[in-house]
Image 1 (tube, rainbow, N blue to C red):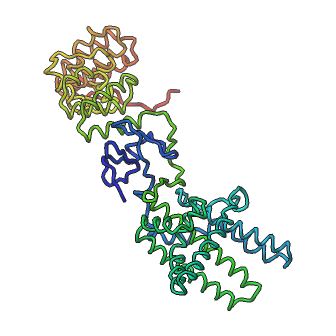
Image 2 (cartoon, one colour):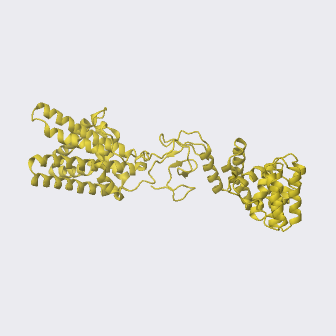
Image 3 (cartoon, one colour):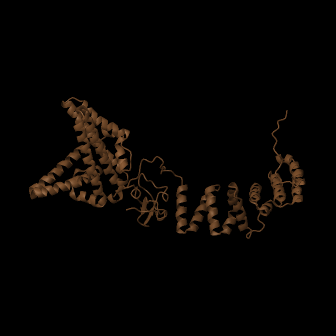
Amino acid sequence: MKHDCHYHPGDPAKWHCSECQVHYCSRCMPDADTHRGRGVCPKCNRNLRYLGAATEVEPFWNRLGAFFRYPFHADPLIVIAICTLVPLALSANIFGLVVSLLLVMALLKYTYEVINRTAEGHMTPPPVATAFTGDGFGIVFLQLLVFVGMGALIASAGMLGGPMLAMIAMAFVILVLPASVMVLAMERSALAAVNPLHLTGLIARIGWPYFLLYGYLVLLTLASGAAQDFALSHFSPWLAGPVSGFLNSTFTLILFHMLGYLLFQYQEELGFASDLQDDSSQQDTTQRDRAPRLDADIDMDLKDGNYDRVQSALISALKRDPDNSHRLEQLYKLLVARNDNAELYRRHVPLLGWLVDHNNGAGIADLLARLEPLNPNLQLDDPELAERCARCLYHQGEYRQALKLLQDFHKRFPDSHTLAPAYILAAQILANGMDQWEKAAAFLGFVKKRCQNHPLHSQVDGFMQQVANREPLKGPRATFTVSD
């Protein structure tokens, strides 16, 4: 059953809390371990149930093209070529027979690895080595036992109820054969793969899509048989054998890949969880960075209306990292939305620093307007911050607020290196913004007299000449002449 995330409707859920009865998506659980299926509910701290990709996997009937492309990757093509062409090159003796049987076993082992790998969420084929190495060859003997068991079931039905019951048993065996292959691949048990109750239970949990897939498999088998018959009938014997073997192996891999994908698609109904494993962009879930977890908690708390909790979390985060621009932005937006001017006043210095770093003159003007009723004579104790804020306000057209920040600057910061640029800025505000040329000249005269060692001192005469001519205070024009 498909579930959407409680906090992000439209996003498929990956986790479920049985205590809170809440579904979470990957954005809500950035710190969960998807590889191990471990996650803790951010609400009640109970272990979550991992849903894997069950809620977002694409139905198998929408990806038939991908099934047919599957065998034509490099690894399966190599396996098919080895298992098909090598027996044809061997002599018809005991050695050739043994090698041919071993290659048939390797191909069958590879096809079962395809089922397991696909059910785990790998949509790329297994590497070549899995066909010829490892301990998975026991699956071949288990498959033989399953066939023997099914034959015994049909024979027993014939002995007990005659030909009619035998026909019914055979029809049942044919119907449950794909389910038997899936059970054998998952449980590696021949007994489970021939247990009628086990097989019918799996079919019942999957439902009607099993029968739809069964129809595809029948068509696939008929197409494979027809293609091989055409090859044997129309090609010369030296070519017909390899083509027929290639077609048989190719259609077998397609069939087993489809069975594995059906398990992957209905993993929740079948009681396990897996996710797409071939996405190289997945994050390392072992990272210790708490930032994504905090962002997810903030997002959920905002949607739940827990604004006090969000505010406390942001303040705590800023105590650990006072210069975190992202947290300052979040806190600013939250306090403005809540109209919490008292808290804005307590945090106004770092918030103004964040606003000026982003050249947000409108935000600075709004924040100062909010703080004015609380402190009409508010002055900043940091000369550089005061000058930068005033400059942003000047470019925003907030001339009076800018001048207020620069008021008595020489008295409050007499030895500050920022005094010269602050008063030149005051002159620009008065001249360009307020048409008060005499006051602008006074500020420039102060800079000329008191800031003789400042690098801007050499430009003051140019400013004063512009004031005398009632020209906009833009400073001396740049020159590109090169002295001899």
